[in-house]
Image (cartoon, rainbow, N blue to C red):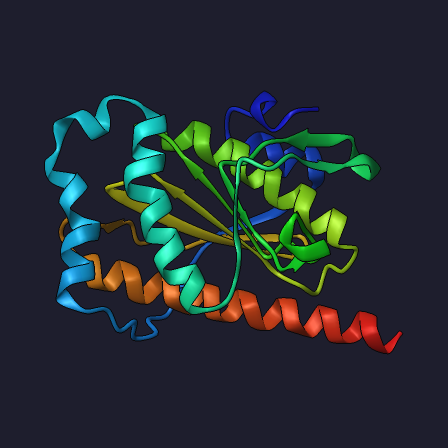
Length: 209
């Protein structure tokens, strides 16, 4: 099955027997950014042409923000890379995933610790796709104890989730990049810091085995 076959997260939960909960689990970890860089990241929001398509939103807004925070946490961002779990016959191309590098940076290696999806307006469709990608990532990692983070955004509005074993937790708060930009950066910083820590844990376990 393809990630895009799932139109709602409920379909994913029923297919893979996953529990669902809404809980404000994301914390803020202060992200230091100078005013020049903040203005650069915010500038595209004032350009109506940026919001003409998901492609332009991805390129001019989302990629820039994610890159800024993920690089600070030394957690590589992979844009539109194929993800497949043969074990559960589930595959697709999330807009972004986060994992450490191998082979000189040409490929990512397990664990995949976060996936993200951009949608112009349909959060329901986005969560269907990205929750399926989170399940595929978890299965591919081969370790249910490593949580998978999920992000869905329109560029302006951002939502967050985490998959822990068979429990999917949706953060109950939607963050507006135009109204609470620093809070968005702080939330992303906390997520990527924790995700990088989890990647290091699994890498250490694999090296010891």
